[in-house]
Image (cartoon, helix red, strand yellow):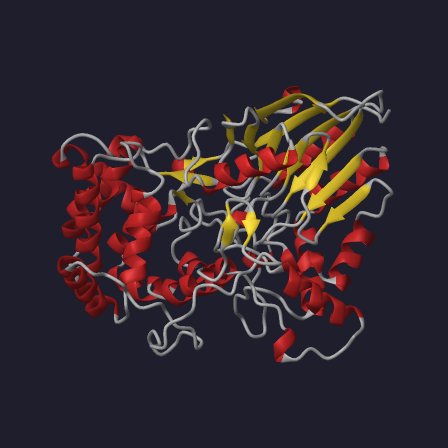
Length: 502
């Protein structure tokens, strides 16, 4: 019989990005993880645990480091994937140097005889490259270290662990193509265009849309939910950003090629499907040759709405509007989970008003912003017993059923979850150690006159990166107690509140 195990599982650490250059409260640097010290303490406490009958294992379930938060120079630009191994190795070394105490704590964990397992995510794809992997292994050299980087899930007893990006069409990693690319790199062979690795659409989104906006608006990758809160706020603060947001369209076209045949099965031999043919009409003149699918709006009123938005954004906007309405409201949040039908219509009307606003002042845009965000009044984004979109629970359900797993554990969404599945299994999400930002609840109810001042102050704070009072930092982990015969005897989603919580 194998030894029993105590497994501590964390994910989405996002170690990366420059620290602030000044002590000014509004200067966050370029980080979403600002609590690396607390994280190092967490690992250090685990390292100090005695070697007993139960083996101690730390699992970092994806997005350990964040290459997408690193700006390379020259040229000074954001990259969806660092294809040159030398640049990726150098970037990893810079990340380690910035947060040395964390990596020292991981080394101590291994030196004490405990185990460390890394699972590849979608912000740290470069770790899979042969040269980068060797640098990582040199850093964490130990018999107790393992790294799953080839698309495999990690199975502990009757628990299945994976990052979860496989079920997010924007962030599917084409492991077949990545494997081919790595194979050539390992032999120092030339890599032609036909063998280059295509970064996920979500990585392009970060590099081409989010990071350029984040240089001015630091909340852009912190505020949840992204569609219902972040987009209206950005448009209220700066209407001119609609042209940057329109770059989502060709990226969404790339994402549409990534489909699953079933809830947790790829549509062909790999994770990437050839489905989702692209239309012939280009979108704009600066979209890297990508094309957006043509709108299929059949209803005359809907077509007129698409036409109006097309004039505003200078591009076909059917997919953009469809993403705003369908993905965020009409599929996974029906039945009153987000808002009544009237509230949804009011929210869409507010968003459209923001889209067509001209050079009016923020003050004149506040009513439209309030209408747009009122759909968040009954938002359950931060509820741990509710998951939306349900793509993750549907995938977990199939994985549990097909594999006979009692627990399916993801990360990726940054939102901690613990809820039962219909099969009797449980779905858990380990959450994040990065910062999150929640739209203030006291702005979402009451008359417009009552909340207008609060909304104005929030907008001004967001515009000037005065975010500390709104930040939600709730580091979470999953603990598994696994018996010697491979059964999960206990599984808990827990908050890390200090050494005593371990």
